[in-house]
Amino acid sequence: MTTELLFREDAYLRTASARVLAVNERGIELDRTVFYPQGGGQAGDSGMLRRPQGETIAIIDTRKGETPDRVLHVPAPASPVLQPGETVTLEIDWPRRYRLMRLHTALHLLSCVITAPVTGGNIAPDKARLDFDIDFSQLNAERIETNALIVAGAATETVWITDAELDSQPELVKTMSVQPPRGAGRVRLLRIPGIDLQPCGGTHVADIAEIQGIRVLKIRSEGKRNKRVEIALSGSD
Ligand SMILES: [Zn+2]
Image 1 (cartoon, rainbow, N blue to C red):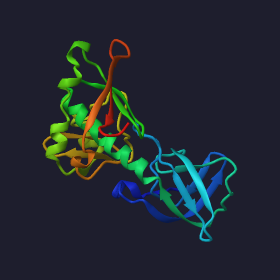
Image 2: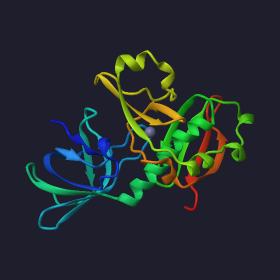
Image 3: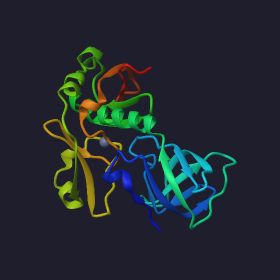
Image 4: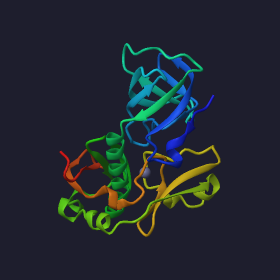
């Protein structure tokens, strides 16, 4: 039992129709989905499932199932219970997801303008952060210049390589804490031409100009090897 991950091919898909495969206390499994499950530091999607008669089930979170190609859609408490075989219409909370896509892609830029190993990261709808193994004195909010890149714009591309190709180019892996999933035979990369190339399974904007701009909220030390840089989209609180 697997779920077709529609967001992998098209991160801009907001709706789809799908068949219910299974329902248990952990969540609802579907044969295909536009809901991104929490992973790689990016929050899981929320939204709703709609029955043909119009009844809706609010989805408050999305998590990975027992294997990476299984997805659990977590319903709000006391939701109507779906039955396997039912067909539903999926609808993600698009404004929330689009903020996640913009912030996620912004972190790729941040990992390029700060040249240090990345030790961790997180993307929430309102803010995102990366942790760097860097000397604190080298981090200065005014010198973290991503907005010039954003204004210039660049189309992002998805590239697939084999596990063996990744093994021969270990420098592609910037995030020490999150190794890309191997074993499926191929690994997905995000390329921002001339700026960045790294393994990533998340959802990104098609052009970095869509980020519009970011601001640094905070820089603080989270330990000897962890200096945390927190950002938000500029113009949003
Ligand atoms: Zn990414």
